[in-house]
Amino acid sequence: MKPLLILALLALAACGADGEPVRPEARSTVTLSNNGMGVSTAVRVRKGPFTLGVGL
Image (cartoon, rainbow, N blue to C red):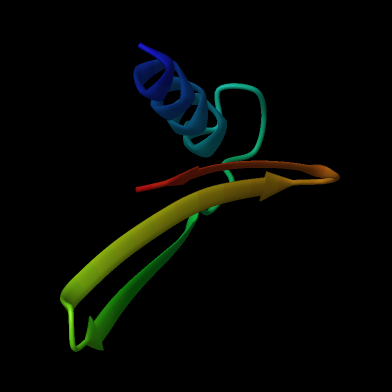
């Protein structure tokens, strides 16, 4: 339930419901090693001193 709430808040902040729209930042990383491959993704929105982010 928490991830859905965080994603909803992130979408609300990014759509501009509370003022001017804010552009989200996304970062993906692919790591290769002897143990296999790993993928991680992070999305965040920054507005003034506040930052809201989600990492998967």
